[in-house]
Image (tube, rainbow, N blue to C red; front, side, top):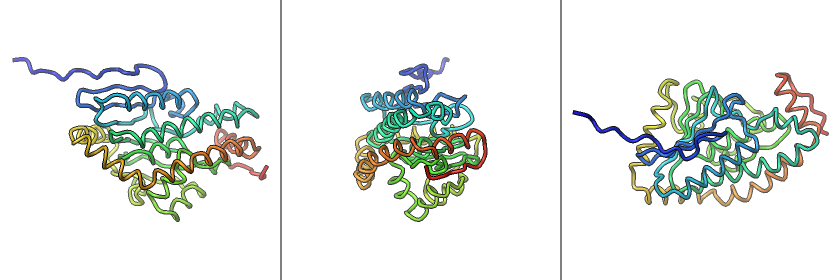
Amino acid sequence: MNTPTQPGPERLVADGPVLLSLHADGVAHLHLNRPDAANGLNVELLRALHEAVLRIHGDGRVRAVLLTGEGRHFCAGGDVHTFLSKGEALPDYIRVATALLQLATAALIRLNPPVVTAVHGFAAGGGGMGLVCSSDFVLAAESAKFLAGATRVAMVPDAGVSVTLTQLVGFRRAMEILMLNPTLSAAEAKEIGLVTRVVPDAELQDAAWALARELAAGAPAALANTKRLLWNGIGQGVEAAMPEENHAQAFLSGMADAREGLAAVIEKRAPRFTGH
């Protein structure tokens, strides 16, 4: 006797820097797909990410979202090679990139379906940390690492992290993370409230899928309204911070210190900042 098989996922976005598929259980799989760049965020990826999140928003079949990254790292933050290549035009590029990142993370927060993010390798910079801080649930592999990193390249946190991180871990710890840039282990991230659970590396994908499917099987209106109630407490603060983050990021990226910081990351050396 043949056992019925569950239909395969519907490929809503089948190629490009962000992939999107919808599974029969109502889980939308949102997948960062620039593995050669550690899923570093450039304008093309950010635009695709925002469009994919809006597509989820308009699809009533979606009951939960799973966000993952291809390759060795979940997301290493902004694409420093692209940023440095812009030279004196970097502020204009950063202004667009930051705006797109803020649109994408704000859209994740506003989604009715809960968002589960699975982190392996590094979640770094405004991109990696921004996506983590904008998710409803975060599962981390035991070997995962978390790094804010913005001030390390003479810039500021973005994606609303200046508000969301403070709410998650507290003011003093957020100040330490954003200004001193420690690399946090998964266990440390769990201890301070940055992530929901830590699981063995080999079990990350299965655990993340199981959680997303558990949420998808729940009462969608109740979960959506609970999510909204929880986020509403900090939502206005996030939205108020984002324009200031964008302005500061564009201004700072035009300084020599920002180009020096980006070069130092690429060359794996300590930066030499001058304040100019």
